[in-house]
Image (cartoon, rainbow, N blue to C red; front, top):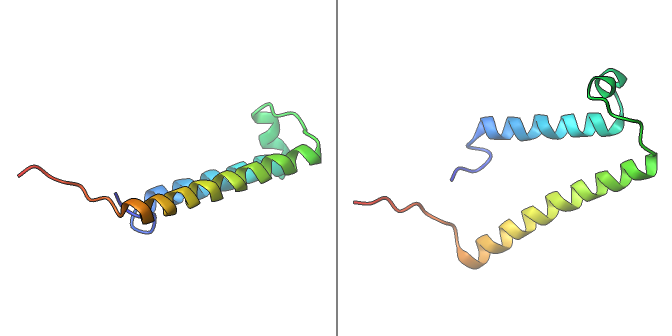
Length: 80
């Protein structure tokens, strides 16, 4: 498995997806909201969604690092 710095296409796709989520959540482009048929949601709910996304990202990163520390870095075994 490659790291994100080695796998540029994956890094770009994650970054662009994150920017799209932030753009749609913030309502920065009403044209996109109309195109995707998104209704205007209250600001408090937008903040809750943003907090959940950040906590999810941090928790996934933390679980990855803890498991990597406990189990070591995996290596692919090729049959000889």
